[in-house]
Length: 248
Length: 378
Ligand SMILES: Cc1cc2nc3c(=O)[nH]c(=O)nc-3n(C[C@H](O)[C@H](O)[C@H](O)COP(=O)(O)OP(=O)(O)OC[C@H]3O[C@@H](n4cnc5c(N)ncnc54)[C@H](O)[C@@H]3O)c2cc1C
Image (cartoon, rainbow over all chains, first blue to last red; front, side, top):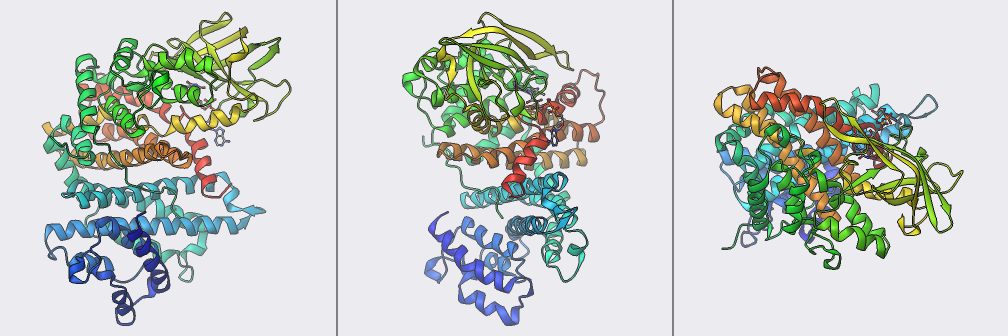
């Protein structure tokens, strides 16, 4: 991780953890502004961080991880694209994908912590193979959502990223299904209570899955893109997206 | 909890040129039949392997001294993903280039290295993996094939099974019990066994598609010199499990079914069916993600890390993806599986072979156990 990103994480993580899902605009927004986070992408000449999308990813992920109830991603994106524009929609989809990735990691951590504590049949639930296998499946999905969010951030920093953001949001949406189901299943009834905090994450996961493009939306966009380019172009296009451009 | 540390992959400047090189080579000597292109890393074509060797595309990362080309892991990755995406018949050399060569270089004595490594890099020596036995599948630590000392020699007796490519391989790296009476992970060693050694018998096992890819291998008083011991006596378990990271992370774990995806896109272009296009989009998103994940593991290997957990995650997700494709295609596209249409033929073929994807290289259940351990549950 670059120094900027480490610094951003060290700044945002404790604050978001403290504010988390109970934050309100009236009470807490000033603290977010104090850190200058809404100006993350603004150039340094305008008092911003001059951050990249990979930097933004760190903040979006953590906002998701802590189920932060403040529209920080929206504020960060506001300076970049006109609300209502296609670009705005795409950037917000990227933010939601990153938030989903963070929230899945948090839900996974809570679930793993819980099954290591909760005893049934004389041993921790986590010692039962069926429970282990479900959580392993969850871990794979969380890994995929995180990797996809990273790939989308890198693409945004390179330029046109419609394909990558579409793919990352779609992949994240799909991971929500498995992740939230397993997280609730291994918690049993306690996870279904208001008192236990799992729902702060899962409610947002379900919400974010719909926002800025559901599965049908993005699979249609991607499908059209791929089909329009033709079957033989898919692989060369995919590799051309990441290869350093040729210098000749 | 982040189980998969995502980091940017530094794609090399040479990538474009390498891709062009591979694409040209495949066009000249590739595989055109879409059914044979599907699952291509099991399709042996020794002439093609030699051609790759001549072109300097095998043993790419190995020292020049042993016939390698001292290129980076990521350059190698570029080459192998190109080969698989094109459905090139790479099965003959795949195992040797992917894992046996690196293992020999890391663990082998000078004689073993000289004998095998340059030949692998030329595309002339092929390898097979001798792990499974009739009573040792998932429970690999129960292997019973034995190596007994006789003077300076080792004498091997026993049997391996499901050995992919034993019938085209020149040598096997086998996990064998070298200490009489030892239990489980203790007392195991790895041996390099030339397939033409007296006492080695290979018997084909025909798979459910009618193809001959794997085999039973019998050892009857196979006499090997002391130098056939690979690495350290008694260290076989550790060596064999470390080798599995090389086996699990590669793009073959998600690209086997690329030929079907290509046919699906072709089909979708001809029929403006929304469901089919949505499926294309969904599969494209997954392929893109898996490519990033798989390359990210390659980048970690390149830095000398052992991304065993990440490699396992990639294999598990990749296998599930590859297995899902034929089923999803079957569910949305009307087709006659006995028909002549390329899409139907590839679908029919992959429906049959895809159950093997989550068996070979470690079963889904065993992989999930490894991931669970990574999560701190075991
Ligand atoms: C196409 C193909 C190529 C192969 N190539 C090679 C090769 O080149 N060399 C080689 O050595 N081997 C090879 N194999 C063998 C492969 O590694 C084994 O099939 C695999 O390790 C499983 O062993 P098994 O088939 O004996 O199944 P078993 O071990 O009998 O398992 C049967 C089922 O039970 C499950 N199971 C077993 N134990 C547990 C447990 N503790 N918890 C939960 N579930 C469990 C398994 O996951 C599996 O689903 C190949 C297999 C295939 C299909």
